Amino acid sequence: MSGCQLCPRGCGVERPLSVSDGGPFGVCGVGRLPVVARAAPHFGEEPCISGTRGAGTVFFSGCTLQCVYCQNHEISTGRFGREVTVERLREIFDSLIAQGVHNLDLVTPMHFTPAVLEALERPISVPVIVNTGGYENVTTLRQWKGKADIYLPDLK
Image (cartoon, rainbow, N blue to C red):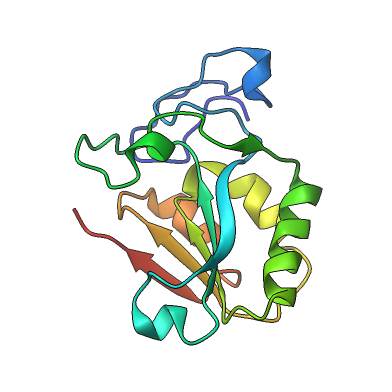
């Protein structure tokens, strides 16, 4: 990914594949491989999202907003979690679905769009929710067409 333009900041940084490769990382603070902070059934979202079996929530590390008041500050401003391959990300999705969740709730995935969309290439049997801070590049949002069923921005 030469010259990253995934977010509205358009930092143009050539993000490395892995955080272990060293920077530069741009505003999001991460490489191209997804960094997953947590993946589990989550019952704390809106009731229509969580339902009775939970949302299959995947919290991604890094964020382009960098809000000082963020409720997920440790996750959004650092590399908290584990870096995963596209194949491992798909395994995580499949595992959550096998646990009976109502949906996949992808929290702050936009700076990992190419990898996440690759993990979503095979059809998913539950709705996919893109849960973001609402600060998106329209071109990046368009890439999610046909993959995201619900766009859930937390407007700041």
